[in-house]
Image 1 (cartoon, rainbow, N blue to C red):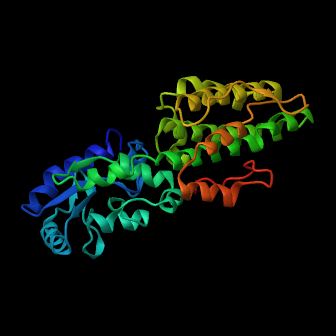
Image 2: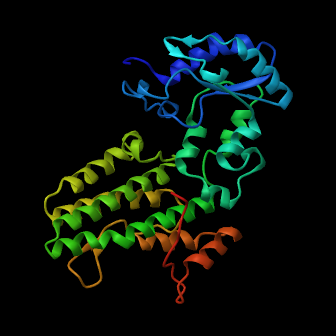
Image 3: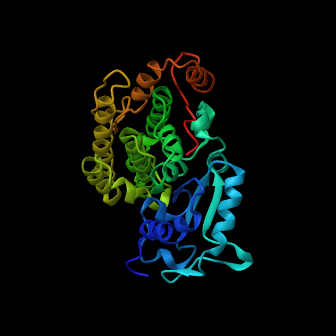
Length: 326
């Protein structure tokens, strides 16, 4: 259905149907969690399934939840041509306490604080939908408080995740040239696409933005301030028909992201230019340099212990980092 915006539809549904029914029941209201419309990525194709007016109503106590559910029994059958009520009496409004709602989706209530494992085991898609979905009503600031806690990683967790992202790039960047030099253009292109995806995700980390899952990764990347400087090089790499051209384009994209990493001030500033891969006729950024620099600035005991336990080689260098769950 052309012209229907899910965020606007949810806001109108709340204002015209839900809020009047709730009366004096104290609550917050938002559109969070699953659904392309939460992040504003819905289009004319989206209404073909699981789309319509919906909202979450978050209350302060189980008693308020009971009162809200009773009041919402008077919701209409439909709103703006979309069904509101479904078989079995269910309707398009989810009612829960704020701690229960966030815990069900994250495994923890962020109002009580996010631990290291909480940060590393929560997909960025989930964090994006909890932080960036529209809020329609929040007089007590219950949503604002939790969303502020989820806005971004603590500094040393950020260093750890960035370090892991650069290490992941470093582990495959040389294969673009290695495969190509053997005449395997397809293999070179496949590796370049993998590295390009990792560089896109790295751009989100540099920009302090939660990356959505694969379907919307490119759409969201195009909205980042870094995209005009990085995107054309990635596009050139994916369109290249020869490995030298492909390798050069990936190096240019990686150099832009390396310079942006330097600007964060999270680690020692390094040369963002590409270089020869050992003695071979292959060009890489050598992303592991940024891994080492970032890890060297970690002071949080828990994060440091994780690096030592999972990442250190016998010589003290960082050879592997699992990073976050994505």
